[in-house]
Length: 310
Image (cartoon, rainbow, N blue to C red; front, side, top):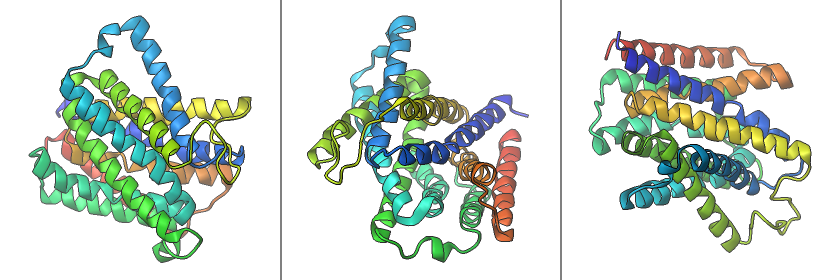
C-alpha cells in the first residue's frame, strides 16, 4: 500500500467533509439577513486576514512569491475563487441547495478529462467510471431521485443553472491549478495567494456592479455581518470551509492526481445532506439513500484504487 497516496486521499475526504458544513453555516447567515453577494467576500477575507497574521508572525518568508506565482495563483486562482464565491450563492437561490450541488459535482468528470490534457494525468476507464458514478450518486442524494424537479421552475431558474455551471467550472479550474501550484509554492503560500486574490477581485468587481460588500444592496440587503452571531458564523466558515478545507484539499492534491481528489471531495453533498437530516429533519427518500450509497461506494473504490497505485 502506498501510504503517500492513501494519505492524500484521506486529506481530500476530510476537505469534502469540511466543505459539507457550508450549507448549514450559509443558511444561518441568510437567516441573519446577510445579502447573498456579501457572504463569499467576508468569509474569504476573514480567512485571508488569519492566514496573513499567521505568516507574518511565524513564517514571514511565505509572504514572498515569484512573478509566476503572483500571475497564476494570485491572479488566475483569485479569479477562480471570486467567480465561484459569487456564482454559487446565485445557484443556490435559483435552483436550490440540491440543484446547485448536483450541478457542482459535474466537476469530477470535467477534472478527469482536463487533467489528462493539461497535466498529463492518466485517464483510465476506472477513473472515468467512478467520476460518473459519484456524479449520479450526488444527483440522487440531493434530489431524492427527482432531478428534473430540482432543476426546473422557480424564480431565477436560468440564472441559477448558469451560476451552478460557472461555479462547477471554477471549482474544476481551482482543482487543476492546485495540482500545479501546491508542489511549487506549498499549501500555505498557495492558499494565501489564491484567497487574497479572490478577496481583492470580489471587492473590485462587486463594487463595479453596484454590489459593494461594504454598503447595503439596492434591495436593502446587508452585505456585511451584523451582530455577534453573524460574525461568529462568518468566522466559522473562514476557519472551516475556507481555510481548513482548502488546507486539507491542497494536502490531497499534493499527494495524488486531480481526478481522484475530485472524486474524494464528492463526500461534501453527502455530509451536507446528512447534516440537514439531523439538524433540519430533511428526510431522504429511498432513491436518496441509494445515491448516498453510490457516492460512498464510488469514493471507497477510488480509495482502494489509490491505495493499490491504480
